[in-house]
Length: 457
Image 1: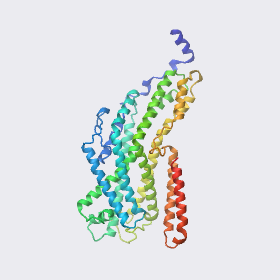
Image 2: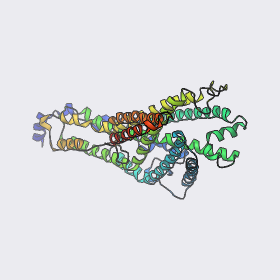
Image 3: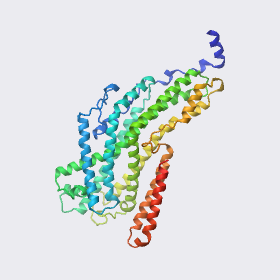
Image 4: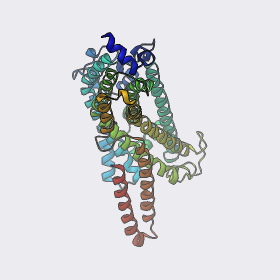
């Protein structure tokens, strides 16, 4: 045995290249999944999402989905309220002639209902997912002191910006109500102007107005929470992969025994299995998040270029030459510009942060290619085959994978759809209806087909 160690030491300078697991562990506490995502779950449950119990516990066995609980009751009542808003919007679309902006509330509340259903399914799968992650953390603990901080700060930033956007939308609605409904009481004119799909059918009452406004507020933050949830989940998965990458980068080019590569490969395998398990649970949320962002960026960009900056809307205080005591007649322009910048920034953040999961999964390849020839073994080859043969990334219902290249694809799709919108707007002008409508429609459908084919790889 001593002779074997002596001969092995000739090829492997163990003292200089020995890697201890404790080297990668800090003095801080373990960054567990439940601690890191606790604030995110609390925010989600405030808006009736992910109705699970035990989120304040550090034990995975305490996390349960209880159908007969007040959280599930709250989710059910909220879902019924969003169904009511969706039905009222559909009723307005069916019985009146509407434009793109008139159809937007149907999509807004409809996707909110779909999002709530998906988060309810996430809640049902959440206890088993938490237990699976806890087993992985027991085998390979992660000590990332900044993980919880990043999740909490991101929650605060997204919620503050979402609240500011909502306040600006209310200011724009107040300004429009003062122009279009000067003969009504202040609050009655506001809700009548802001929610015409409800109060054109039902008589006004303060209770109905407050309920409608609460449902709209809830729907707005559910829409923002989808992106926030994807971001925080991506933070955790990326941290798990970077924990393994830290070991590999510290060992790059060094002479290490086969057991090191075997252990690290098993850790990497558990991390990639965790990504796939999480993707099975949240892929629907990823899909609805990207679809929502794509549509509403196009809508807000169109509104900003058409009505927001020009101030040519039907109830614009500038177009009616009526002085406003809020933002001098620029309430709508301020809201559209801020909403557009916020939507683009949030969408870019979701795309880049979620794509880091895929980027972190490819880091081991260069390290494995740099393994010295004397210690190259079967485990290194198996590790290489696994890194190069697997595609590790979050996906949107398996229709697309979230990688860095997806951001450019989405940007191209937005430009294409903006051109389609302007084509339809131009073709609807009365001067050229007979000559230009067919040409523009054909071009529009051609652009739609090309954009869909580019969006789905």
